[in-house]
Each structure stands twice: as C-alpha cells, then as structure tokens.
Image (cartoon, helix red, strand yellow):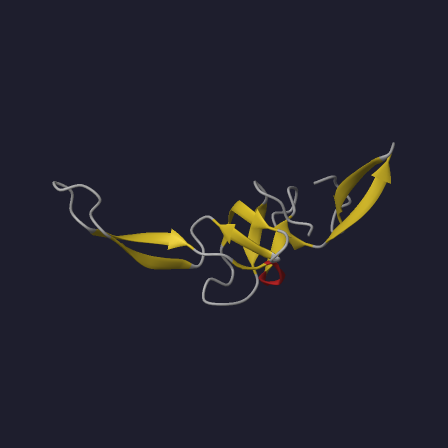
Length: 101
C-alpha cells in the first residue's frame, strides 16, 4: 500500500469527492485508510459516569484506499506513486513531478 499515516490525500469518489485531508490511520491488511474530516458518521455515545450525559459524536470511518489519491506537495493535485530503490532504501516518488514523497 503506497499511502501511509500522515500523508495528505484527495478523495476521488463518494459523497466527499474533491475534499482532501490528512491520513489518521492506515490498515494495510484491509487496504483501508481513515482520513481526517472525511466519511464522517454519527456515533451515539453512552454516559460513562453518573453525572455525565450521553452524546452524539461524529467520527471518521475507514474506506478503501482505491478511493483516494496522494496529493503532490508541489502542485497540490492528485498523483500516482512509483517506487525507486536508492542506496538500498525504497522511496516513494510522485509520477506527476518526480519529487520524493
């Protein structure tokens, strides 16, 4: 999976198409990511203490990595990623500008 925690991504499909955000969590085995402020759902939270009230909280939910594209740091546009091995280390490179991600 070429998207990691901390990357800035753009949503390609779905109700949040065109929005961008930071990846909060990545699940490589499931091929899913959680993006800040994207794919929000309402979660009803029960009161945990006697003097506390229950509430409705909005949480970002995971969605498939194929629905997002990495944003290029130079052009701020979605880009594909290719891998290159330099000095025995694997690096991610933007196909749009050729800059190391």
